Each structure stands twice: as C-alpha cells, then as structure tokens.
Length: 119
Image (cartoon, rainbow, N blue to C red):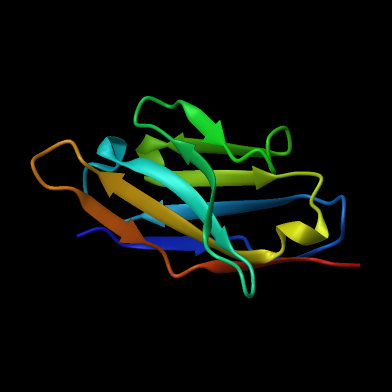
C-alpha cells in the first residue's frame, strides 16, 4: 500500500511560480511511474506531466516550457515546478503513482492540492 501526500498548493498571481511536492510512503518508490494530474471546476481530470522510473519526463502541450516534473527516489518524492502561471492553470492538482512491473498493476492517488492563479 502506498500513500501519496501532496503539498505546496496555494494562491499565486499570474506570471508567478509555485512548487508542488508529493511524498510517497511505502517501499519501492523507484518502481513507480509518477504523474501529476489536474482538475478544474466543471472539467475532466487531465494529465499535466509524468515521469518514468528512469527519469524521462513528458508534458501536456499546455504546460510545456513552463512546468518541470522531477523525482528524488531517495526522498520518495516527486515534484512539479510551475512557472509563468496562468489563470487557466487554476485547478486541484493530484499526484498519481503506478507500478505495473509485476503481474498486477497498482495505482494510487493523492488527495489533491488546490492551485489558484489570480490577481
């Protein structure tokens, strides 16, 4: 069982920066693909960024060049650095972990953290 706890959300002005962190409990964090999703009011949850077990990152087109995902396996933590924030980045941001290395795929979600971009 893995528990994911996000932190770092808050209110920021347009053009500002914010960093999110997701701390994972349990073992074998390095075996998990880690993603950040977000969900704005009235919209579907969407993938923002992901990072593989090997450290390869991918991003939604809407955040490329502005967001950076990274992971620290020694700290069991994945990060999302968000720069040049826009009002449309306002959403609840969720951390997600997936381990499909064995016969069974394990998936876990964090509780979410609110990011509000507003002047």
